[in-house]
Image (tube, rainbow, N blue to C red):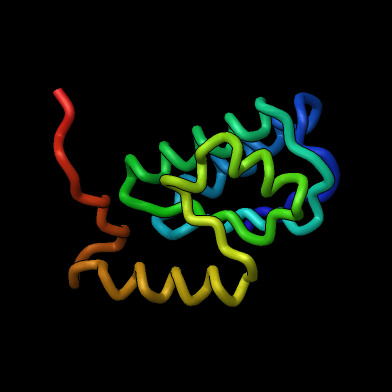
Length: 120
């Protein structure tokens, strides 16, 4: 889990990205707790989306938890919620992880990738 405290802007985005990269190497969902975040710019949001895509490519999930109202507006305006799970609480995220883990076929350590039409 990564807990963000303060402003997730250009100054903090590289360290945030490195923390997410480190957690992306494991075959388990990554939870990003935004409860302590006070702001997020486009670069911070971009780092979050890039980490989500890397994890998805490895059949794993990134789950965002408890974005405060100002960050929730940034997330809503960007459309990120259309493809990335956003939970209100850590308990809600834990329940989602339990559901995702139940969907893992026996003998597999990673989460299934969502199915859908293949793009050419």
